[in-house]
Image 1: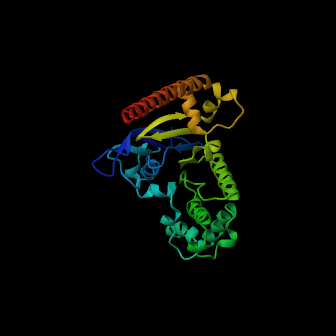
Image 2 (image 1 turned 135 degrees about the vertical axis):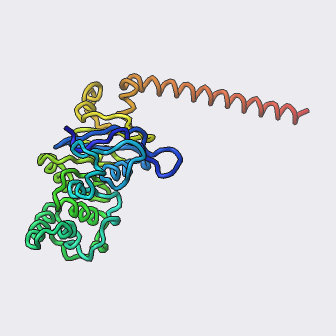
Image 3 (image 1 turned 180 degrees about the vertical axis):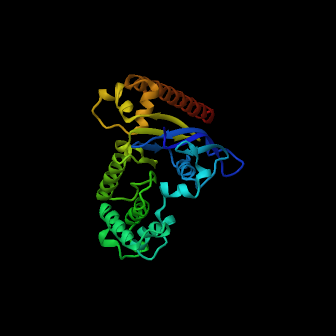
Length: 287
């Protein structure tokens, strides 16, 4: 049974073209979903719908098989969302207070709050920053603080919007370890990024969102089988999907040759037309 599910979800911000069109999606315990697509395709909107922060125009989001909206607000402590811009969820005077905020809101005793804040800060390498104001940190550090603020209350579902953006190599490694640990603990992790190569190695399932629809969903193993295994070179995901649609390197080569022939044919025709026009001009001026 999936932990979180979307059934025929439609959503639009205006009366114009829907941002999401008939989305069906499900993810279970221990599953790590990489959600990719071009900037502005609706990835962040989809995560907000899964978190219950937006409501579908049509369809529904389910948590453990029951409508999410009917479980609010109690369900909020089971879902943690990292916004694309960490500044949208940081508002406390210190990093410590930021991480502790959710626990205090839940009425957790202060000694337990202190323990869990310290553990979470250590997990993300934030121990030395606990007394610092979040607004004085780098964007990457603020992203880790925002991540800590949801990890600390131990949600079952993690919705991470651009979790590796603005992070240095060490920060990316920290996030990688965190996601791996969460999956081993049976949590459901959904990571959205415009750069799928940044998150695909962590995923058990890959989804591409484009033009409002979930165009393809495949396991990482499926992406690595077939003709992809014939080359040891790392291939950007966009090229991998293009190759998949065309049927392999040979088909891509045929397309490139056809385009090249058409280009040169048109170039030759334009060149001949230009020469004819020049000759006509010379003939007219010499009369």
